[in-house]
Image (cartoon, rainbow, N blue to C red; front, side, top):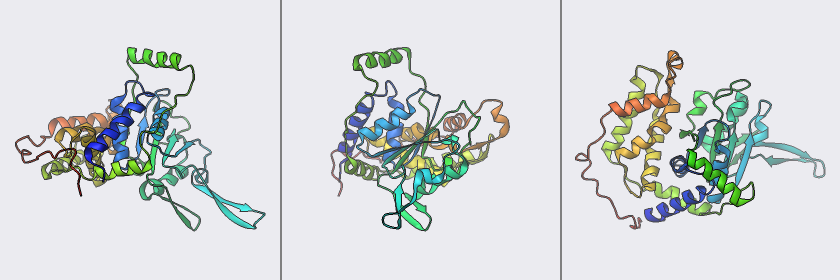
Length: 332
């Protein structure tokens, strides 16, 4: 079993290596890595040219994962991503040819450009880590992670993801524009590199990543922290601006992300600050807001942030029995 300290060091090395390609977005990279450690899928929603695709490729390289890429288009069919049976005339039989889903990390680029039938082909893979083609079921590799991207400024020829599929993503993150100095750093690195592509080394391999994911399960969660997550999710259901709030799956996503976030911070227990750090990316995309909020430009992010401000968190006195375990402690 990998210790918490070993897992934290590996995670730090991964983030440092990804930082060679992604300039100035450490917080976003931490959220993506926390999602991967929590065995979840990530939806990256932002404007073109903000390194969404580069981020997915960078994590595949640094984590030592096989990489598959799907460019979603309106004419994409389910068989184009799952694979299909092809007739072999020499042997007079059908052979199954695997699609790009048979990889450890799959990038679904501009997922909202594909029709619902193709989007739905991802559901079984994301939830059950398997695909079914005709009467045959195939298990996908472990780990299996989907990082999907969306462009929020173009709506012509797009198909908004249904709530059922949005709920499959453990987190939705945005990258955002870099600062002025960060933009110059991007240019400077390109000048010094003298090449378009940047090569990243593998910091861990597949087995080490699986061990890191198992180590996250050792992060302790106090009962009061658990009820804080429950109250947060229930508050989304009764909020005046929300038609449909987060489900128990949203609570589980918040729990798993908070445990991963605590590990990245070098702790073997979850604090209220960990929950607050991941609540917006874990819950905002799961809310169905009242239609009139679109005119006011109010989104799920603002609603969850407002709930966090209003909902009292467990105090240090209530959690004073939480005794941090040494990070080098080897659990049996």
